[in-house]
Structures are given as structure tokens and as C-alpha cells.
Amino acid sequence: MQSNAHEEYLSARIMTATPQKLHLILIERAVHQLQFAVEIWDTEDRIADRDTAIGRCIEIMGELLIGIRDSSEPIARQVADVYAFLFRTITEAKFLNDITKLHDALRVLSIERETWRKVCEKFGDRHASHEPYSTSGQGSMELDPFPPDAAPSLRMVSEYPTASGLSLEA
Image (cartoon, rainbow, N blue to C red):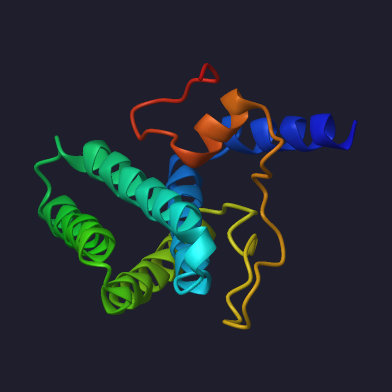
């Protein structure tokens, strides 16, 4: 029953979010995935989990790039360059087994997250200060709003909503 309530909350959060809030949700999810990958980096029996987290982050960066690829605005080109850098750096971290590259990407993503929080605050998004993940660096995440037992369709939307639209179908 608790899982159903969580799924309803998550669905409502995504379906009622402003475009800038959806962007922030993606950035927060990418930060969460990289924090998790860094946390378990040296744990030999968790290499598959680490690679999955990094892969999800790469997919998120791809979605963010897709969302701005058609814009001719100069600022959009600059943002696309940042996301292309992140995509490349995270991919290299995975294939070169280089945690330093993950730390570099995490620093840039953290700045990007704060930027989008400010955008949300400026445009009146009441959830802009929502902190779904611990950023204390103390090891574990306090809350994962996307638990493993969430319905697959909600996990898909919550992890990979596109800038061009959302679907609740997996």
C-alpha cells in the first residue's frame, strides 16, 4: 500500500511539474546516480550496480541533449556544450574505469543543479528547494524517491522523462 501511495505521489509530481522543474528532476537524478557510483566505486561485488548507475546518468545526459538540440539560441548552444562535456566525461569514466572523471562530472552537475534550482525559484516553482538526495558526502543517500519496487512505468518516467514529452508507458 505504501508503494502505491509513493507511485501516485511520483506520478503527480512529474505530471504537474513545470518544464524547468522536469529539467531539475533530471539533473537531480543524474547527481544521485553519480553519487551512488562514487560511493560504491571500489566495492568489487557492486561493479554491475556502479556501471548501471553510470549508464543511467549517460542516458539522462543524452535526453538533456535531445531536449535542446533544435534550439538556435546561443545560450542553448552553450548548455548543449556543457551536456556534451558531461556525456563524454561520464562515458570515459565508465570505459576507462576512472573515478577522477566521475568527480569532475559530479562537480559540474552540482553547479548545474544549483543553477536549475535558481531557475525554478525565479519562475515560482514551489518545489525548487526540495532536496531528494543527501549531498553531505557522508556516504549514503537519505531518500531515494525512486525505490526499486516502484512500478516500471513510473521508474521509466522518473528516470528518463524527455524534454519533448512524457509517457507513463514503459
